[in-house]
Image (cartoon, rainbow, N blue to C red):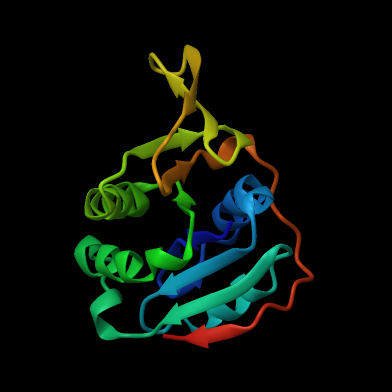
Amino acid sequence: MAVLLLADVVMGQLATDQVAKALTAVKGLGPVTVLVAGMGGDAAAAEAATLDGVAKVLFADAHVYCHGMSEPTAALIHSLAGDYDHIAAPSGAFSKSVLPRVAAMLDVMVISEVVAVHAANMFDRPIYAGNAIQTVKSSDAKMVMTIRTATFDAAGKGGSAPVEKI
């Protein structure tokens, strides 16, 4: 199984802590490809490649992605989705806008705010304003999920994944 992890990039810089924690959450699911989308994200793509556990970095360096618009990013992820069993992102405003669009295009549900990964299709997420934890088991063909990064340790550096421009 392979994982596509959407990187959070702010002003051309990788949100390293968020991406590294989301990487920790999903790297047990299979090889992780990090997607960096946006112009001027060369440094973000290079930094993502140094995270331990990243198999490959895809860098979409086009003007259409530079303003953080959800629709073109969702279309990009949908075009790449065939190669991945899991599509994930750190839980934040951008991913909460992009991933529901991706899930709708794939006709699957979004599993939001994952706080634990038990198996390829079983996750914990908070409910009732965080007062209870729900275990979710999905039968969808692809898992689309946001990761609540506060519950995971950050992946270390030391990786040397290749960066591929798409």
